[in-house]
Image (cartoon, rainbow, N blue to C red; front, side, top):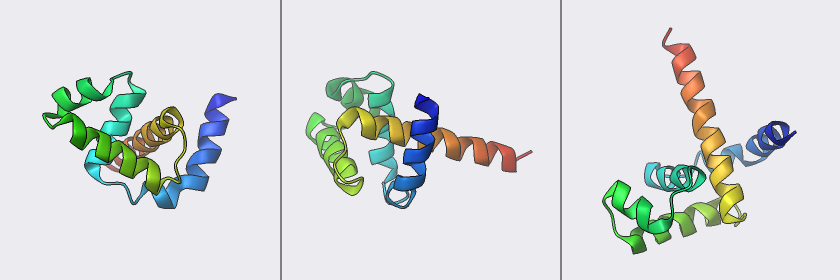
Amino acid sequence: MIQLSITLDLDLYRDRLLLLTLRQRQCMVLIDQGFDTKEIAEHLEISVSRVQKHIFNARKILGNPARRKAARLVAAFEQERAALEEGGNR
């Protein structure tokens, strides 16, 4: 049921997801993987304030969903994109 919900949300948010920058997507995927803001900053070698700005801007572009929901959406979107790229490279 959760997967169906995410799939439906992806369809609703697709245009907005395409507007996110690489750094915004990276930050949101790392949130989905359980990283906190400080860990994301260390992992990406950027400041904590820059991470916070990327997260803020990503959520704003997506219409301000909750942080976890936004992270799940972006992670699912990135998985979908990777699968499509992998399928096209065969």
